[in-house]
Length: 81
Image 1 (spheres, rainbow, N blue to C red):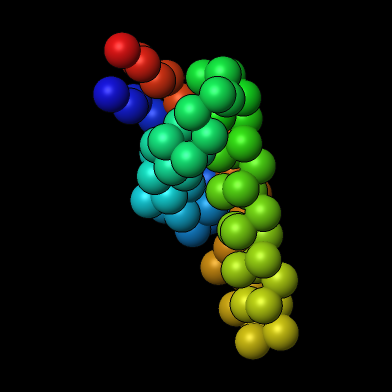
Image 2: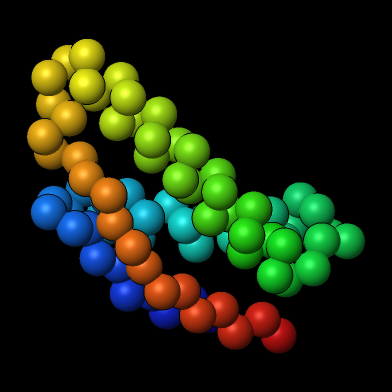
């Protein structure tokens, strides 16, 4: 299972994006790359989520919506069986 605490510093968009996508990416990485360690799967998922969010922020900037997106932090606990 997954348990996460997400904090979007100065805005909720980063936290909401991570809450909606990080766990999906962890599961996808674990399934797609069976030989990948659990730590590496989680790391890859974090990096993918960050890259996707930053891409979203980048394009939003040009639409003058960047004020709705902010940096954030989270803690994720994964209990792999």
